[in-house]
Structure formats: structure tokens, C-alpha cells
Length: 206
DNA sequence: GTTTACGCGAAAGTTACATCA
DNA sequence: CGTGATGTAACTTTCGCGTAA
Image 1 (cartoon, rainbow, N blue to C red):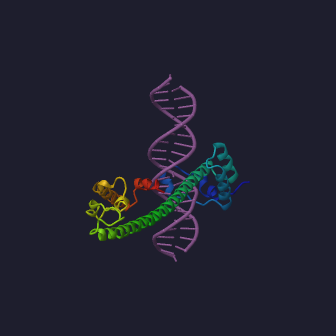
Image 2: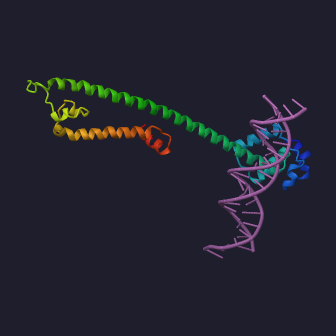
């Protein structure tokens, strides 16, 4: 199969010059015919690079200069690459957006859990306030006076649920405080999950 | 075995032109 | 018809690789 090539007829006959001066002049640039493009595309589908022999053969078949075929393949590879980069970008962006929205909902969930915890602490603290006057009450839970001094103590052991180790509740309170502090740091750390490192770190929780 | 010069082809970027809204 | 945007053929520059001397 041979193609008539208007490009060859009108411009290439006078040897597409390499000199920049001629470039501008009368290089009557013509697009390749649909048939030529169709064949080039079908070849490109199976091989994105042409061996010199194959290039000559294709050029002969299409009625083009081997150089034209080579250039077409170069340009086609470039187009293919930029398209792939665009696709990769879209995929990554979709993944990122998805992750970000999950992160946002987890953040909200965390906030509501913290709120719940605070309310529960307050609820559990109320009976202790009432028991203050009657510490000799039969069968009542042991109330740690150190704990009363630390209303913010949110640890289970300090919520009137006595444990082996809550002898020194102050110490635990300190730890709990640090824990909340850390949570704040954590929140600040992730207020803007835009940096790749943070993004990576976040990934380990998902 | 190494160094050097050379040719070739590819990638990346640019230019010039055709086409279309 | 003129114009800006877009697509693409062709070009230039740069680099890496293979090869012969």
C-alpha cells in the first residue's frame, strides 16, 4: 500500500532544510492524511519505537521520508507521555481528595468523641461532689481526694473506678494532661495535611 | 584495558504553520 | 474577514550509548 504524499510533493521535494533560515520561508507544512495517521497509529500501538529497517519500510509504504516517520514517532511518544502524566496526576489527585475527606470525617469523629468523654467525666464527677460530705457512707465507692483536686482528670482510674495504681492520681493526671496536649499537637500537625511527609504518616493510620 | 572521537537516536523544548471557533 | 487558541510537523539542543581507532 502506497500513499500519495502532498507534503513530499510540495515541500519535501526541495529537501526540508536544516537551516533555520529556510525554516521560516516556504516549508509548506501539510498534515498527514487520515490514512497515513491511521497506519502510523496502528503501528505505534504495537511498538512505540521503530527499528531503522522498519522505519524505512513504513516510510516507503506511506510515501513519506524516513525522517518524517521518525519525527512522527518522536512527537507521538511525547504526546503519549504528557497524556500519561495527566492521567497519573488525575488518579493521584482523586486518591488524595478521597483521603482528605476521610481525614476530615475522622477529625470530626474525634472531636465528637472528645466532647462525649468530657460530658461523661462531668456526669461521673457529680456524684462525687454529692458524696463529699458523707465519706463514711456504707458501701460507697472510694473517693480519692487527690482526684477531686484535679477535676480535669479524665483517666478511667480517676473517674471513681478504682484501680490498683491510682494511689497517685496526681501523677496520672499529669500524664493525662500530656496526652491531651499531644492530641492538640496531633491536631495541629494535621490541620493542613498538605505536605507529603504528613501525608505519608497519615497513611500508616488508614 | 583505557581513552577519545564520532555517529546515532531519543527526549525535551521550541518554532512555524494549519485549522477551527 | 480578522483573531486567538489549539494541534502538530519539523526543528534544535543536549545527552547517553555503542563502536572503532
